[in-house]
Image (cartoon, rainbow, N blue to C red):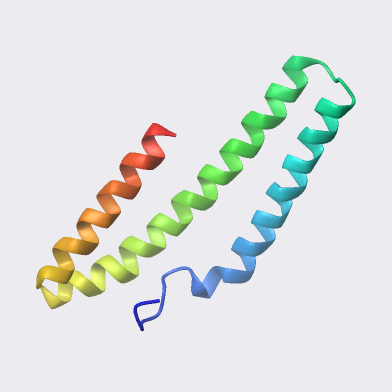
Length: 97
């Protein structure tokens, strides 16, 4: 996007695989609602899908910190502050979610 290697690219296939599994989980949750399954069982599956998404998000964040933010910090200019602010905002969104 900004002309450099994104931190997640080395693990792109693993991330896509995990996201496809989560997509399947969410379709399963919709099916459970359609079939009027027990509320607690549906909530349990939603919790599992949420945890799986958070795990992907943390992996992406770690990759971002160790690539984009680290590279920007080495440059030491306004780009470093911008990348740190982006990461801080992303962390805040994750914590609130």
